[in-house]
Length: 191
Image (cartoon, rainbow, N blue to C red; front, side, top):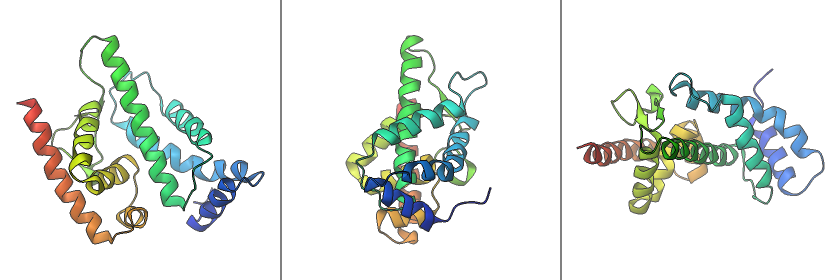
C-alpha cells in the first residue's frame, strides 16, 4: 500500500474533527501503518520477552485517539505529535506499573534510534527519560516538545518545525541543546 499523502490525511482529520460521518473509517487505514511503524520503533528497543506488544501499543493509542475526538486536528504532523505523546504516556505508564509490581526492580529499557540518540548508553530507562523531559519542559517547553516529536513521534525535523511553527534549523538546535541537557540531568541521577 502506498504511503498516504499528508494532504489526504489532513483533510480526513479535519473532516473527523468536524464530525463528518465516515471520516474516521477512511482515516484509520491510512494512519495505521504510521502508528505501527512508530510503535515498532519503540518496541524494537524493549527487552526480550516484553509483555507489551507492538499491536497492543497501537491498539491502546488508537483507543485513546478515538476518545480524543474533540481535538481540533491541524494536520498530519499534529496527529503524529499527539500519537507520539500518547505512546510515550502508555509506555511510561506500563514501565511504572511493571516497576511497582517488581517493587523497585529495574525499569523497562528503551533503546533510542541512532538518528535521535539522547544518550550514548545502549539502553535508557523510559521512566527516567520521562522524568527528565518533564524537568526540561519546566525550563524550556519547546525543547522538550522537540525531543518528544522527534524521538517519540518519529517526526522529521521539517514536520516537527511545522507542528511547533519554527524553522527546521531551530528544531536542530533545540534537539542538540536538549540532548546535552538531558544527558547532564540523567548523569546526575546515576551518580
